[in-house]
Length: 163
Image (tube, rainbow, N blue to C red; front, side):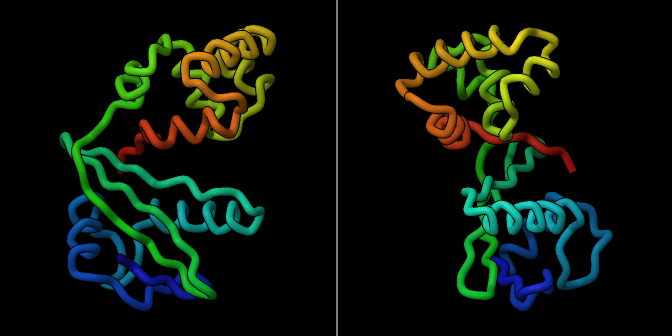
């Protein structure tokens, strides 16, 4: 666990958190600071919290393992909860739900907050085709909304980042 004060200053860090950060990120940081990737993620998640959005975990895969960081606000402090487990490929995790690779790709963009038009532009297909993919995704996952589908995505897989 890491405790971060307003303004991003680390006020407390457990020995296990310090070891996880050292294992997953290069050492270009001060002794009690956060790696740049974690600092940027914290900033974006604070912004999401300010807009009453659910914070998304930071997931970093490295050599068959993954580090998952979750943010919890407690008054004026922010807690970063770190855990380590086996690496999971998002497409493989979603494959058990019966999604095609294209549907998994569309869902991954939905989970990142993209609109149908944006996803269509990224994948070079029409927004109507995106809507059709979403209808299939909703049916296969047993959900009725983009939010519920995105939630299922984050439960079953995570965005993979490489340091």
